[in-house]
Length: 623
Image (cartoon, rainbow, N blue to C red; front, side):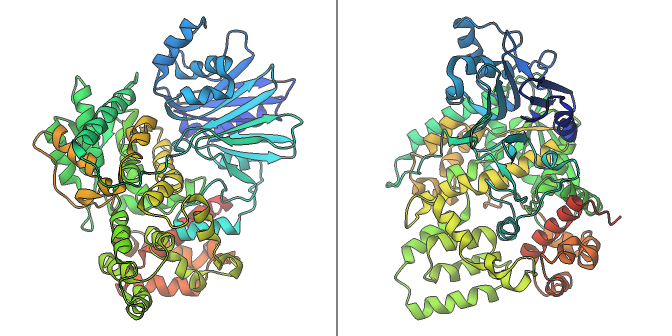
């Protein structure tokens, strides 16, 4: 697990060294630099040592120094690949997975990516061909940003290093609009106009003199099967076989390893399987709160006891939240409004004092039908055309008058309305924030951003003209998963130098899950196959509980420890001074929330997240 960077226009290596220094938090154990003075290509790496701690220095080359590589992430099948390469006559100087890349490249060129199972972003410089190759893993677990200036190309694991040197870049109003609606910036764009993200499962090839870098897709999530529900015994057994295989591969490490455990289905199953693969008690980590009603640490404690784990609990207090949130949100390279970022960062920092890498449950909901909205969409499909138009219209008008906390009532009303599935899906994912834009936007976000651009962009990612549940599960894998869920996991952990591994995002497991009917996945309250498997893996049986996601007492935080932070933003934040949002409207919403008249967390958290990030981006310090 590392941070990587490089450029095609740095014969001295100084610019790349500066980018590498900005990524130190991603790799505090080691750093390295390679420069090819003749071409100007320079590669840099910061290393968090996980595999072959002593000999895994990067950048790393082949025997004659003509192919160089830097890697962020882990290649889980690297032992098998090493054996294959040795059989093909290659010489390996280390046991590190990075060295596998240069020799695979010698054998297969860019097609090497098809042999890799892992989470990765890497760069390979081929001196003989004059070719720079960038690649990103299939689901986007590891980030990779790039920036073009004329014929030159720079890249880095995070956005900020590409903006050093006093060039902060110009914000993209369309990206700010998307951020407010989604709570994250969808790729391949970024919050800055001229910086791009390499999409998941894509390759970029740069050659000097070429008009444009070549960007191409090498894999995509399969279309989820549209078929009748199948007998589940065989499906559950195959899920178990593949998940055991995936967890086992992700437990290979030369440093201490743990498991993030919330007590829900995803993490409980991972903990049970990890315990079966470990000779010693597996270390588990969970977080609870001193306010609100969403503390789930008791569930995690029960599961940890059942699997014989060495369990560790952190209580995230209001005092810690008041200090952590401003610092955390200001430090991100792109704004992110997922409230779970805060406890995830806290438990990552807590775990880092004991372990260097953890296994977590990201991806299970998207692949195995865990989100309640999938089941609600099925109900909407069943009612489509059966509700009188007058009743449906009344329901549509009533939705925004219902309290946000009564989300089940809101969805019942929404299900009765006649609406396209994609729009309904969008509103359920985003708490209908797009309908707040005309009220809350300032002059910097002109009415041109209030058109149908967002729904059109989503529609372009859906293959079916009338998307069904399986199509929307796949859309979540392409959109929500990489740009929100996995970005959150990467930044929360890498800011404290911790590696997070995700067994559910194994390619073979994902492709198998896509062969299963969505109606099978969404049975038993969602994630039916995982629930059945957990019943066979967890001593004492699976705990029965409703799907809650990684809940956070954000509403209470905004009324308590974060109220002064919100007040400060409303008084002098760049987000209002630059005209991105309307200060008067935001004040009225904040006052109503703080005094308990309504719960506006779904609007205030994105405003606070963007405001704190923007102040950090502008270098403003409010004390």
